[in-house]
Length: 330
Image (cartoon, rainbow, N blue to C red; front, side, top):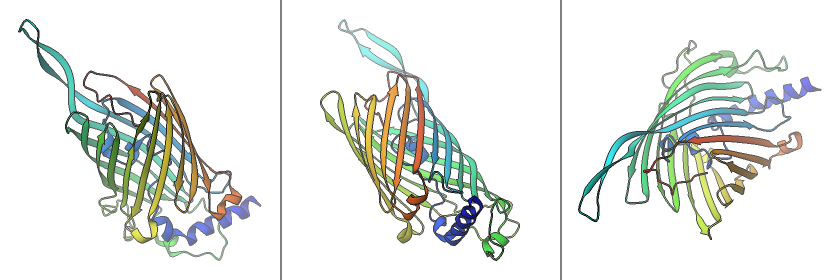
């Protein structure tokens, strides 16, 4: 029975390969919690050093279901500077402080989708510009390199299945690429735009069969606003619009609402058009953050799976007098 399920799963994946091309970039339900995964301009945006781990297991109990693992690191490069103050007796005092506009980050990722696997790393550079007292405009650029592996030997297929893609495509290729992002933050609201695969896989390495590259550019538009209800409660609606070069076939919208209590606990609900309703929950303990998401799938596959689970762990280190204390994306 298990072998038969694997046959149907792989055959189904082969039947929808054109659709999978529109979803080459990993999907994340907790895009608010670790926006750096989607937008390189978030690297060091809050002046903290942050390390994180995200694990996403999609369609549990379904053979060859997608899964994603990502380990991230980001920080702000701080420079020594001085501020000058005048005292009541007209004495000028120079006091050291910290400042800096450059953010750096990177992450390792491993993404599996049926017989297709992507494993690689990404390094990001961000530049942050203060705009007024409580506003920040950020730009980010990242370079990535990953291995694209088609596991033909691991597939179980009927003898009469023949596919030009599998027969002619190199099983292992290496693809360098780049991503770009921009974001704007204030105390009350934030917005960001990013695009991936700027080179569209044009510099594919190991393409012995001289196959045409099939990497697509992906686009992410995010935004949110915070409403402060007293001293303990914060309500945060947000939205993410994502698409690819196949714009009319791959547009998807995530509508999310989260409620925070004392910035230490939160609950949320998200709706992804044509796909799922997502339950979000999380907590903060000292400098550690843990977030969990469960996707209730709408499609017919829901009869064969326990749902999709996503777990995110973050740890933030460091503090300094020049940090924008009004920024708290988590």
